[in-house]
Image (cartoon, rainbow over the protein chains, first blue to last red):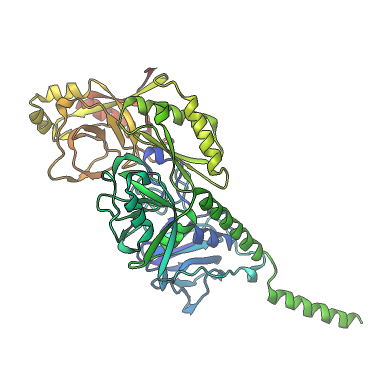
Length: 335
Length: 243
């Protein structure tokens, strides 16, 4: 009762929102890179908000199901194929025992997510099911998935109400350039006025140095006042650090807890998914907003997700039309 | 010191409290006291605290508490804790088997210092080291206060694998490797105690602000403690006292 990995893809791991509460002891948070796609995948199945999913990168996995379940696929478009037939994303899909789900490479975006209505049987370690590969902690044996791995389901859950309504407009990840909104600081005062203007006024390019720890950008030199080394301090998700080479590095899920380079700004939470779905050579621009604006954007997104939840809990048009016809037939019989 | 404390924004979900711009036991005590107060106050929405050498990163959930509110509350806590340097001091005893196959670089350290191996051991184990912060690896402690006489440059050629429990010196720092890891420190001994054990209820024993005291043991004692550790029966010796 579960899934067998036939092909692991490039980097497929079990993730949830991350392992918080242990950063003071040196444990990275890890967790999903694209929080929005992760939440939508779980939302489509009425899963708990923090239920574990599979996250895959650039080249997706191939899975065999050993029992029926319901899944939802979100994130970049990895051209999912179920038993040889293309299947839609952002839609609840019924899966039968023996089905084979195959992903290709990312046509758009760079990370994909699968949520399961039957929940992955992965032990909770230090409050989370997420994989911290560097410390071999959590997830499936603390590592990425490979051919032959088998993950059980925790429960049997093969029915969801309003099944036909469970589809949403997919997010798109195919634009060539992206504007990332940032909150300046904590150490923007260590950079020259010119340096800050360069950072906010220039185009930066995503390099191939892009993994779950961080994303290095190439572009104009950001000048600091007296070098950018600081006494190591804590790092937030989306921190933009600028080492002596003057190029920004955005720190992501597997970032170390502390670091010794000045951080010019922090990417707004709602815009981190836009960055993590980019590929090499994508163009990035930064735009400064206030912390209040960034928090409002985050709350607006939560409202948007609530709306999505409502949409998928209403009878869909097709069903309502049938009901209408049934009603008419009934009146015919009754008269 | 009060007016030097700054509360900086680190995005929409974190605040960075900067207590100063130097590494000093006073500032570190102040940070530990603030962490303690924050824990006692149970501010709803605070999800993680990362104390470092001279700052504290507070991660919070803006769905639960918004920027102005948490900033003001942190401001008050920082003010409340005007008095520093008072409080309990927790010292963890870390038994170390020095030299031989347990510490293959102890001869390097002794040679660099112009001392005998016995003197190096005596110096290393004769003071308590303040844990400024944890980072780099789970459970890795940044310790302050290594005696200048035994400062030793890192190995020119780092090792690919250093075993968990290794105790070494890297420049002006000393510490314990919590996990198997590559590294360039000069290894002087091994502790049988697991500073990080994911199987244990408390995977990491110490926290920033505590102290570590290295206690020399011989090979027999090392093996005896190691066996207890394997069986999950070893209790780390902790001394508590006033600072």
